[in-house]
Each structure stands twice: as C-alpha cells, then as structure tokens.
Amino acid sequence: MPKTQRERGRREATALVDAARHFPYLAGNGIIGTMSTTTSSMPGALTAVGESRRFERLSLSAFVAVLYAYCAAGPFGFEEMVSRSGPGMALLFLMIVPWLFSLPMSLVTAEMATAMPVEGGFYRWTRAALGDFWGFQCGWWNWTGTFLMNAAYAVVLADYTAQLLPASAGGWRHWLVALFFLVLVAALNVRGIRVVGNFTVAMLLMVLLPVAVFTLLGLSQMRVNPFVPLVPPGKPWREVYGVGLSLALWLYSGYEQLSTNTEEVEDPVRNFPRALAIMVPLAMFTFLLPTLAGIGASGDWQNWTTGYIVTASRKVGGHWLALPMFGAAMVSVLLGLESTLLSSTRLPFTMAEDGYFPTRLARLHHRFRTPVQAIVLTTALCALLAVFRLTQLIAVYTWLRSATSALTLLAAWRLRHTAPQLARGFRIPGGALGMAAVVIVPLLLFAWALVNSDRSALLWGPIYLALGPIAFLLVRDLRQRK
Image (tube, rainbow, N blue to C red; front, side, top):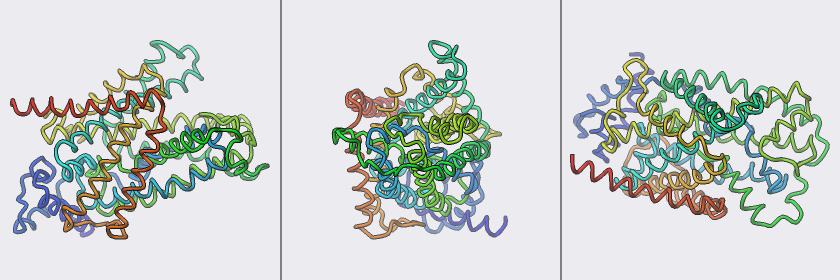
C-alpha cells in the first residue's frame, strides 16, 4: 500500500477507534467491525480499518461537486426574495446569511466528521451524543422529510418539461414525467458514488458556463444601482424580513447533509473540512454575483419571481442565452434531486445496521457497493408524494430539516462536554464561547424561519414531527419482541 494511502487510512482509523472507545455501539454495527476498543488492540485495528473499503470513494474535487450540487447548484429558485424583501435587502441577505448560518453549520460538521468519520453522519453523531431516542428522531425526520424534498424536485422537473411538452402539463402524464426523473437518479445512485460524482462534475459545467456568461454580460450592462431600494416601499416588515430571510436560510442550508456519506469520501478526516471551507464562499459568490448582475441589468426588481433569472438572461443576452439558462435551471434541479437521494438513502442503510430497520436494507450490492434496496425503497416512497404541489411539500420539509439540523448542533455541543478527549482532526476555534456561538446563532435563525413559515406548514410541520416518537415506540416494541 502506498505511503500516502497508509497515512490516510491511519488518520481515519485513529478517529474511528477513538470514537469507538467513547461510544461502544459504533464498534459493533459494522462500522469498525468486531475489533476491540481497548488501547492494546489499536495497531491491528488501524490496519484493518485503513485497508478495508466497504464503499467506493469520492475524491476531494468530486466531493466538492456533489456538495455544491446539494447545497447550491446555481442561482436558481430564490428569485422571489428580490421582490419580497427588496433588491438591496435580498443582496444583503445573500452576503450576510452564509456567515451567520452556513459557516456555523459547516464548522460543526467539520468537527464532527473528523471526530466520528462514520457512515450515517449526523444521525449517528446525534445518537452517540443524545441517546437512542433523539438519534432515531434525527434519522427518521431527515429520511422521511427527504421524501417530500425529492418529490418536490421531481415535480419541478415535470413542470419544466411541461413548458417544452405542453401535453405533459397535468394529470397522470405529469406524474409519469416526475417518476421518470426519480428512476433516472435512482439508477445513477445504484451504479455507485463515483458514477454520481463524475455525472455531477459534468453537469455542473453545463450549469455554471451559461451562468458565468450571464453574470459577465449583466455586470457590463448594469444601468441601475442593484441595492436601491433597500426594501420595497409600503411592504410590511414581516414580509420583508420574515419571508425573505426564511428563503435565504433555506438557500444556505444543508451543509451537514452529506455527512451521511462520510465513509464514501477519500480521507474524510482531512477532506471534509477542506470541502466545507471551499463550499461556503463558492455558494455565496455563485448566488450573489449573478443576482446582482441580473438586478442591475434588468432594472425591474419588482417582477422577480421564481424562475425569473431566465427572463433576465433573455433581456441581457437574447434567446441565445435564455435557452442555455433554462437548460441550466433544469439541470440544477436534477442535480439537487440526485444529491439529495444520495444523502438520504444512507439513513435507512445505517439505521438498518443499527437494528432499527430490516437487515436487508443494510445490504450492499456486491459489484456497485451501494445500498440498492434502501435506494429503491426511498425512490418508491418519493414517487407516491410527487402528486402534490411544490409549495406544500417544501413548507413541511422545512420543519423536518430544521429539527434535524438543530439536533446536529446540540449533539456537537454536548459531545464537547461529555467526550472532551475525543480526537478531533478539526476543532471549532474560540473554545466554549466559539462553540456556543456556532450553535446558538443558527438555532435562533431556525426559530425565526419556522415562526414565519407558511400557515399550512405551521399545522402539518408539527404533526409530521410527532410521527417520529410514534415510529420510535413501534420500532422499539418490534425489537423487544424479536
């Protein structure tokens, strides 16, 4: 084995062995095999873990691409923030929110991924820190919530297709188009994470090239100050600072989600912090600059609604630019669906390893080394929900995402107190005060977003959350009977 590969394996194995010493259940569920967690067994354990490969693995560049596809995938889908909050405030949100929200989530994820580089990520971190009940809630809420998100992506893709093929605009044809895209990304995920990574890199080039052209042309044709007015005249403050900020928080969320694929990343102890350090500014600039250019060049911020950036590109560059931007928007949604399915399917896989779900969901394909049955099950459940409207799906999902992200933050905070000696390849700077800041600020922003969420979400979000404890009691009862 080459020296660099041995060093990577040793770093990962050291983190896993140290995590297993503090949390014995990690050593018995297939993550670290049956190795002892005593200090005397560490040399043999290092070799076994460093050389074993349950999964194919992504390089740093491919991981950054998949992470970008999940968290950003281009400046699409948030145009309504401009007309709701005003152009100036929307641009300020795009500049400020990542430092108050994305950066703290990234710092927590980086610390936990280096301390416990295990498949399942935030679900297993929460279980180790807060116990079985909250660990189960974290995994259940996130997995079942992604049924809504993946269905929403499929609905958007079907809507885009209907613009090109009006015959598919409604009814069962619309659902069949949504199902087609779900099956497509499921097939990619079954083939393996490297296939997903390579596909994502290629597709991102198709997305970002027309976006770059649009940005350069827009900046060269700016005719109004994009920061004026700061807020829309006469708009109620709750719409300006409530709905707009909630959109910005949604836009900059998800930085912990791909921790479910931790063991599928090359040298995660080193590459997770690196990827997150690249991701935060990359997302900010690819959101901010095209939006600034579009507002400044079009001069009609009042008309910005979802999908308007394609219209702005037509004003800036004509039909020759609008068509590639339309394609880029569609590919952006496809990449969001692909990467969300990649992340979410590792939750039933790891929860099955931990004994919560049937063991067949924990089986890996002998050739592709992917949890095929977990992928198929998740895709089928998403397809059942693809008959609902987009706004209904996303509004409820926001509650589930917020709950699991909050548990991830609290788990990292608790582990600082209960397992201070746990090896951490990266540590949030600032000591106890720094940790408190990166936990409390996002929690306050989550609360603000939920209070200002859609009325139907205020009803159905808590109901959906309440299904988690019910599911836990049912699963616990079944396990006790066995």
